[in-house]
Image 1 (tube, rainbow, N blue to C red):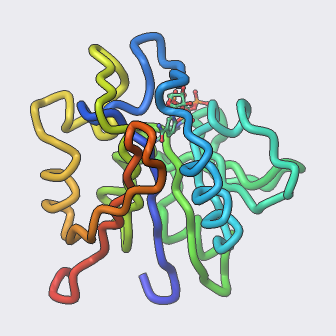
Image 2 (image 1 turned 45 degrees about the vertical axis):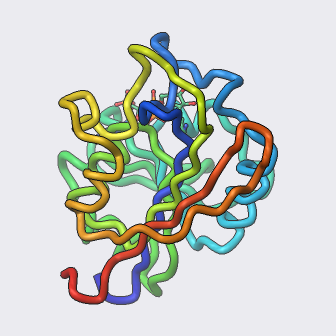
Length: 187
Ligand SMILES: NC(=O)c1ccc[n+]([C@@H]2O[C@H](COP(=O)([O-])OP(=O)(O)OC[C@H]3O[C@@H](n4cnc5c(N)ncnc54)[C@H](OP(=O)(O)O)[C@@H]3O)[C@@H](O)[C@H]2O)c1
């Protein structure tokens, strides 16, 4: 969409999990270097799009503009804590035109259903941090396709993104960051 740039952000284990079996984010996926990078990136965004649970779990001291996905709202509504959006009844195009009429950069920090939805809408970039050496059996997958046997890399490639260089952001682990970007040829 013209004037809109969509960036996804996730930290995953080697087996492409964003949370453990209970749905909670384990300490093994919490990393100071990743958090600092993520916060600096959020500062660049005009809007943060996230699931209701992530919204409720993470206070918003910087009062960043948020668009919260939830099936509990009939359509799209403005509340004191941000915009709330039901994607089943209002299209992304209509939602973003209302919330961000001037366009801008959008950060998408998940969780899984939100990551899945934006695969269909189209990421311009996906910032994939990996806690190398960590495995979370039966954990929550980054994308639902990862539960069907696809790797995050395969899903991102299929969605038209191209892998960038692996950067080590914390030698403990190590923890690495790879930024995937839309290829010039991709729609
Ligand atoms: N490692 C990472 O990078 C990363 C990233 C994100 C989250 N996490 C972790 O992953 C765990 C799981 O997060 P989560 O998926 O449970 O939380 P979430 O995505 O923040 O919230 C899920 C809720 O968002 C709403 N939602 C999401 N997609 C929707 C859609 N397409 N249509 C309508 N509503 C939608 C629903 O709210 P309603 O129930 O109101 O309908 C759903 O119950 C948490 O522990 C979180 O910390 C990790």
